[in-house]
Every structure is written in structure tokens, then in C-alpha cells.
Length: 336
Image (cartoon, rainbow, N blue to C red; front, side, top):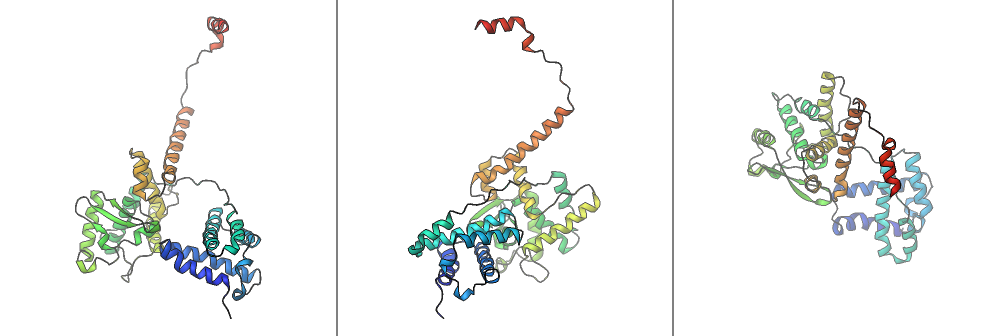
């Protein structure tokens, strides 16, 4: 059977265009692939279209809009996830319109499908007291506890995304002054993040204990599981959840949801509250635009507003005289 035009262009888009031309990371390519996996399953299971017969012209605006509705209503995804799936479809049809001009109108109609507006989420971050309680939980008398202590310290100190954390190898750590860690962020962007002295000492002891300072082990993962393999994102989440639950048992009033990304937000907020500019925080966290970093400024202003409201509720002000009762002022104003 002759391959369909959709199969030809979709394969070229996922295997060549995204990797070779746009140089996207494997994780981003997998996320794009997952979008088209869902779309193909929808066409097969809900529309009854055999995938070996699915052509490019069949993927039109009504089908795409029905697919997005399916994601929201049947799979109950959030608006943010819906927009992400639509962005992947937009990227594909932006590629197709230059490869197959015959479908230019169809592609532009799909590109005209707007992203759904959604409410901005507030920045969820930890206070310094709660952060200190979590960092103090690992039992440093054991090997696993020492690993967890280093992992949590590096997670906060670098403000790394969880994928950036698990991708760190021993050779990405520099302990000589100025101590720093090399992180590989979104879009294969590399940035060097400085380390505080306390984290540097913890890392130095950990590297020596694990034998990761030897030249032949520089490619080994910095954080490993029991099998010696690179720790996964879910492994990091499990470690963090374990120590957060320990804090909850000690402090029942602590009910805040904590994820690895909470540590990243916490670092950003602490930097802002210390007087660091948004441009420096943007570069530190690896944001592409300073507009992304402004979420910390908005959260900081909201925190100050609430503090002012609480202070206003408990403060009594003296009676302020009304200018309307000042006859001489009224007469002067009328004379103007």
C-alpha cells in the first residue's frame, strides 16, 4: 500500500525537522509525538478512520476542533494542556504549508484556531522556615540520606527544572572557585549556575564518597538510583514527597503542596526579595523572556498588598478633617 501524504510529512516533521532543523530536545520531540499519538487514536477510535488511509486533507479545522473538545470533555485536560496540544498542531501545519503549498489554505485555517485564554496561576513558593525544615529531613548518617540532602540542596540552590537536575553528570560540577553547575535547559540551552558555599561543601563530600571525581566517571549521572542508573523525574518526586510528608507529621499545620518546581519558584522569589533584578533572575533560571520572570514580581507585590491589608485592619487612624468644611478654602476655589 502506498503511504499517505500525512504519514510522509508527519514522519519527516518528527524525525528530521524538529531534531535536525529546529534542534529541539528529545523531551520536546516526545511531547510533540504524544500529541499526534492522541490525534491518531481519536481519528481511529472516535471517527472510525483507518490510520493507513488517513490523508492530510482529512485533518481540517472541524476535525482539529472536535479533537480539542475531546481532550477537554473526555480526557478532562486543563486549558493549559489543551493549548499545548494545539501549539504542537500549529507547529506541524506551519511546517506543512511550506512543504505542500497545495494545502496552504487548509494550513492557515488551522493556524487561525486561537489558543484558549486561561487564568494565571499564582506562584507557589516556600517560606525560609518551611524550606529549612524540608532540607533538614534527610538522615545524613546513611548513604541514601546524604544523596537526598545533596539533591534537595542542589534543587533549591540552582533553581533547576527537575529534568535539568536529573540530566546533571559528574563532569557538569565545578567545585573550584567560583563553584558552579552546568545545566542543560529547554531548547538545548546551556547555562552555568553558581553555588553557595554550603552546597559546594556538600557536593564535594558527595562526589568523593561516590567516586565521581575520577576522570573516567565524569560522564556518570550525579544522582543515581539503587541500580546505579540515572535518577528519573519520578524518582526525584518520590524523594521530595517522602521528606515533605515527614515535615507534615512534625508540623500538622503545614499543608502546602510541594513539588520539585516549588523549589524553583522558591529560589526565584528569594532572589527577588533579596534585591536581585528580574534580568539577572531570568538568566539564572534560564527563562527565554523577562515576561516569564515577572510572575515573581507580581507575586511579591500581591504578598505586600496582603500584608498592608492586614496592617490596615488592625490600625486606627485619627479623624481627618474634611476640606469641604474649610470655608476659606471653598471661597478661594470659587474665586479661581
